[in-house]
Image 1 (cartoon, rainbow, N blue to C red):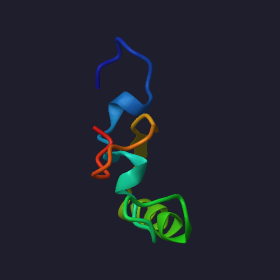
Image 2: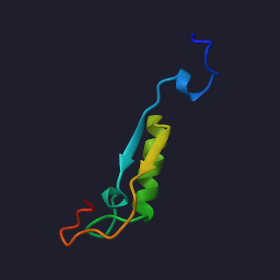
Image 3: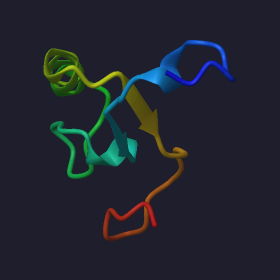
Length: 67
C-alpha cells in the first residue's frame, strides 16, 4: 500500500456510468427523469457501480442527439 497519500477512494477500484440524460429510458424519444430513470438508478446500485456522472444538460438537436 502506498503510504504517501491518505487512504480513501483512490485505494480501491471503482466503476461508473457516464451518460447524457437523454440516454436514460423513458416515454419520450430522448428519455427523461421519470419512473424508468429511477429503475435504472436502482439497477446501477445493484451492480455495485459507485460513480455516475451526467453530462451537461441542454437542448438536443432535431434528431434527438445532444451533440
